[in-house]
Amino acid sequence: MKADVLRLLRENAKGMTAEQIATVLGVSVAAVKTVIRQLVAEGYDIDKEDGAGYRLISYPEVITAAEIMSRVRTQWAGKKVYYRNETESTNEDARELAEEGMEHGALVVAKHQTGGKGRRGRSWECENGNSVAMSLLLHPEFSPEKAPMLTLLMALSVAEVLEKLTEADIKIKWPNDILINRKKVCGILTEMRAEEGTIDHVVVGVGINVNQNGMPEEIAGFATSLLMEMGQRYGRADIMVAIMEYFEGYYDDFLEHLDLSAVVDAYDSYLINRGAQVKVLDPQGEYTGTAQGINDYGELIVQKDDGTFARVSSGEVSVRGIYGYV
Image 1 (cartoon, rainbow, N blue to C red):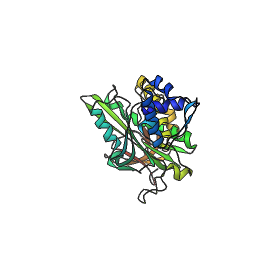
Image 2: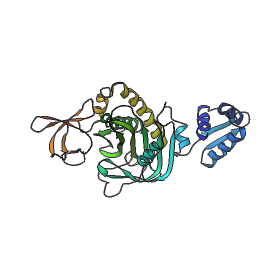
Image 3: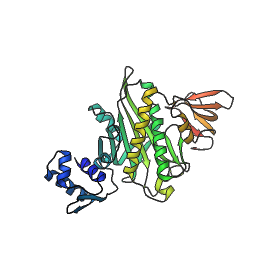
Image 4: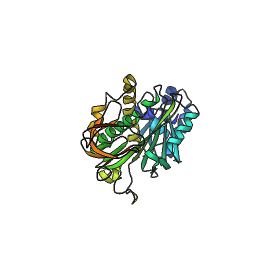
């Protein structure tokens, strides 16, 4: 109900009376007034004027379930939000919700994530109150081999949102890292549970460094935050809501063809590896070559130094620049 009250106040800038809100939501006036008192206590500036009723003047920089659900304009992505003040992993929380039968599109968000994971078992800790840590639960009906492409759809969604927000040089390092000024600002981890060729659920986790003032020494050379690069703070809820809207559109389009043919050009336009010399760290053996871009299935096409072409799939394979991270 809190999200519904916030949504109505946002949609009616001139104000709504408690009676009007109660009528729309089918609840009591007393219940509406209780929610408004709660919102004020949480930092929302809500003005009450005779005749006009309640007006939302300003709101705090929070990522609560009510805040996100009152703002998202999607059909299914992020329509139901589960907020954690602190958690070890939003991906793990989303997996547990899936086992409880939670619906497609449920979103887990956390103010502080202490034990997040990256690809190949790496850790990803999101600083308390300064990061985006969220995981989207999906129940796809396509075959498991299609699931890795969702990572690239999310990467494209994040890249477009951050570019629009910052107007900075945003790039993607295949398949799942988002860079700003050639430093990592976001990581994406897609995890799946499938049995006998059928997907039970997929969780797409996103971690974004937003308002940190600095990075730990061990990653300072290749990681950064939006604040560090742009010199200003950004609203985490703004970012989350926009990503849900972009991803939903890409996901729904993806279901029509079950490949990335519609977004190859868009993804390649952000690909920092494209046309660059890369080192492919394959368990079967390392090799170097020139990255050409992705194909319709999200594989990175690399022309090896001997002139032959390789299709690189995400998973246990890692791609690096010849002289470092990119």
